[in-house]
Length: 386
Image (cartoon, rainbow, N blue to C red):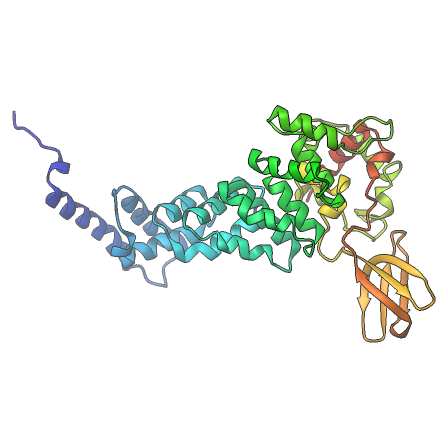
């Protein structure tokens, strides 16, 4: 019986064989014309992708046609698991900006977090860092979340300075603390600030949630001596958000509470009903995770939506009004108060006009509700989807 030797024992033969196979597939892809249908191009690109992924230690840069086919394949369904795996395997640095864009648009999805982790693998995490300074606050907060979830030991040097920067918006500082709050090393540093009374009051709610949920018994015990979550309507201590998200409520009861005891309808619209002060919540369940929903209710200044920041205006007559900025021209400024009333002031009567760090939304809404009522309201808001 003839003996067969493994092709791997003949590197020259293996190289020629791989080149022939790859050449065939790349040749097919290269012959595709612009007139062909998209699905045909995709099918041929898929053949090339299947070929190159089977080759060990294949250098994508050695074959421009193969690289072009891989790039087309990745872009055709950007964010798919296979596409992200191809970017990581072949170190497609040219797609780093696309990865960052995709990640900040999907910070709470598996694919978005995977995209962010690949940026760290490619040493292109600076693209996430740059987005922290974005004028779009939602994008900046998304970048902070992603760094906290994928940055490993780099999280602390990247985000701790932001927590200490009083010049930054409260929402960003809270997001930075929350992003690293799951790490024991970060929790110890935050706890030191708490004990030394150096943690700003506007960060205490986020710090309490992080420290009182710690896996470290010593951290939890020490935090319990210095921090407490706000009390609810029945004087019961509020559970941590980590515990609240595990609870299920009654959406029907939550709908009633939304319009009554919870007072939510006084500032928000749902399908045309309510006041147009805060964001329309008709589709909020499609936009926020359950955790983010609790944060937006219990720590509203940590989750201020773009265009819903509050401003304070003081007139030369001593009147002070706080509200949302509706319009601002050279002649006048109009603010909408928490009651939904628009107040217009002439430019020559304004003595002070200043953006506020806190949301116009009440900071202690939980005082109106029991824990179960709060859970019910969140259960209802999670049903408000497209």
